[in-house]
Length: 407
Image (cartoon, rainbow, N blue to C red; front, side, top):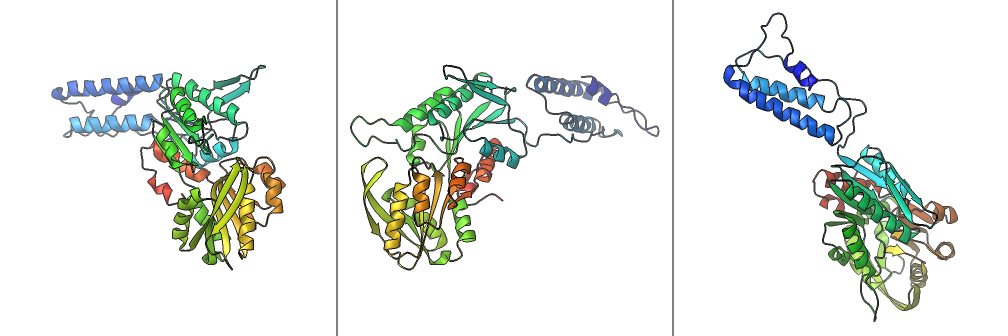
């Protein structure tokens, strides 16, 4: 409190007498000083901002208080020190990355102008996951970026441990940023004794201590209803529209195609925004990851066909769909996917298929896949996730992101 005492006892310029508040103002001034002392004490306990952050508001508020208490006296404004060059742009926020997609997390923090939080993840000799949070999160707004890809079960467990570690370390709020939600395809009981694993994952996240979920293009929007906490399901659609307009010269002569009936709502929305027609392909499966038959509904003759889906795993569906479209008279075929899982023979199938390009977002790491196939192209959605985090942290609406791409 030495700083406050010096500020209050600052001397007047030689030409002006030292200002002394009138007697009735002294109790009020004492209360103000007490409130400031208490606020500073709380800031020190909870982790004070970088040097220079607290000085400007403190000196300015004291100057205004003195002027309001003694308006008839000539009181000098207390000096406002310059802000620190290393001042953090977004206070009270920490973003940590799991081991599934560190590149995406780094892009997000670069966009926000802050540093990635320090965390160490490792495995014991018996393959148990160990997480060590390397900095204080007390009273902070914490965001944990972990995508459902790679070694999904290990990454899911790692995220749950990170959430719980931050929660019991007195974080004010913990938000799980899950660009690709794991087990999203197991969202209903489609046969006897089948599990609803997406609901189980939702329960695990809630029990671990998550207060909020940010994800992108859920396989079924109804998964949001599995949670009792807020869920923001972002859409890649604005970024997809931007890519189509910038990279397909004759997009006005295109037709948007859904490879299954479940994606009809997605393709009609994109078709309406582009003012083009749409078609869909009805498929039947004998078993998982194996398509039995396909029927095209719509006219694609002499048009550029753009297949749009939320994810592709082994790519059997979209490759068969591309063949069906070419047989029906399409001039070119593009595929645009939000989550490019590309497991098993997927990349080989893409290379052998008749695609002009297979476009995916970076909700899942694609560096290795892009090395194996020159048909795979990338849409960066880190700006959408970063803006969602910024708006959530500041208490703003995220509805803007449903129709627009942040600059």
